Amino acid sequence: MSVDGRILTAIQAIYDAALDETLWTQALAALTAATGSQAATFWVLDSSDQPRLPTLTCFNFEASFIAEYQNGMVPLDPTVQYLVRHPETPVVHDGLVITEREKNRHAYYDWHGRHSDTRYRMVAQAIPAPRVQAGVALHRAGRVGRFEPADINQFGDSHRHLSRALAIAFRLGTLGTLQQCTTDLLDRNPAAIVLLDYRRRVVYTNKAADDLNAQHDGITVAPGGVHVRDAANNARLVRLIARATSDRPNGAARGGIMRVERPSGRQPYGVFVTPISREYPALSSIRPAVCVMITDPERRMPATNRVRDMFGLTDAEARLANLLIAGAELRAAALKLGITYGTARVRLAEIFQKTNTHRQGELVSLLLTAVVTE
Image 1 (tube, rainbow, N blue to C red):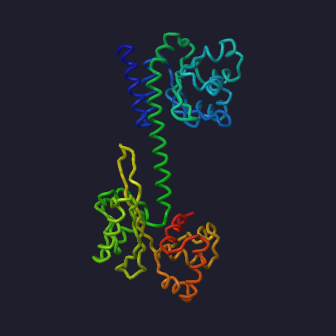
Image 2: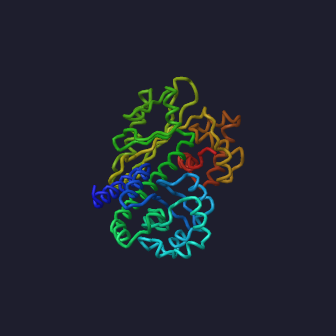
């Protein structure tokens, strides 16, 4: 394969790695072959405190060498120091950083020479997002020789592809991180959470929803939607979901709250239906339009302390609030707490005042924001 062919193959490999980060090693191997190098790294630089490389994917370096480098040598590396000071320079090579005579007297290169036969380096870098510096470094052994002007120019010609690929990788990586954080947070919620699209089909369930579905106790979550075993309650749920997904003239779709009796005779589920904004990117794979949250009073709800601390409630008020979150009616909550209905109403009035709410539905919607497990 010609040099140009190897370069094109390497560029394609970089774009592939941008879409799938597990392919970076293959992309580095292609770059190494195309540029007459002996090793390569893909890196992300964090210089907020002192220089460090939280991401460093390597090709043809010993793992022990890289571990020692990351654990103490990164701040001493003259090339890293230069990159920190010159983030806008697209291609950095040894001639810009240090002379050969200085290398021979530098502590970092003394350490480097004892662990690796690579001596020359050329780096292409980009800023794929504000305050994010990333790039690819090529390494040559001393016996091969330094990167010549022709090598530097050729690497510079491919820089725009690297810059685009890194921007793509950063956006996808950020999206993946946010999705993972969101999934972890939703899975920690003791309430069953089901997201439906505008056709009322299920596009997401958290762990609690999967556990609830496995119980077969009055509510079924299937790809086609959420269904209640009792026909009358199922019709009511259908109406609430339809109302939440309807296109109202003022755009103010709204859901609602209901209880669902369980064939097992256990305490009823509390079901909360809430519309979700449908403004999503054009290429989004899912487009949730409504959230169905199902609470199980029989399940231990660890939110009492959190609700108490968040809104300054007393222990007694927090216990009442927790039962309301779980879907209990006020009379049932009073019975469970062993207090009179009148006492429960007084406590509810105090909770309204402390949370600046006026209706039980409004209160429950607010309190649900605190129902996340420790």
